[in-house]
Image (cartoon, rainbow, N blue to C red; front, side, top):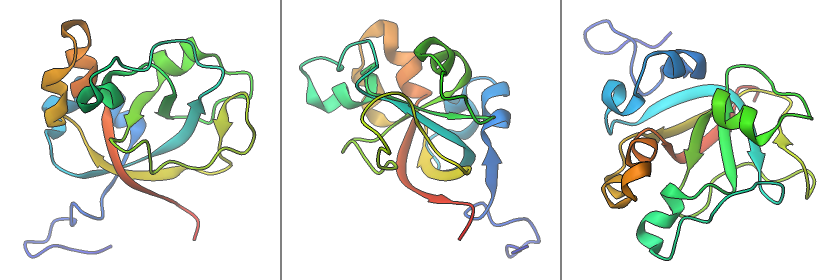
Length: 153
């Protein structure tokens, strides 16, 4: 365990389970814009995803789009997981550049991993203010990813 200068765990090294993030209410309120490390099971639907690409305004399209759908889950999903299940049970992930996210193992179906991953990023991205009104809360509570790593090294 690495200790900070006053004896607390260094927040840059603290890994927060996604289950905790999901049950604490609005992550944008709890964590604000600070960088946090969240650990969970990654899943992605791209070609099989049904929804829009976020609209014509590129400055917010990446944040408010419905597809591709990338989420972090408290438990490893099955290979038959549905889009509805991912949307209901997962923490939505996005990035302004479309990455960094794990590469796809196959072109169709959910992109699943055999281990939990740690994602680094923040909530309440400034671009959320530009999302369409019915998606502003979802945009604010989407985890904007800057990096990820596996737990096994």
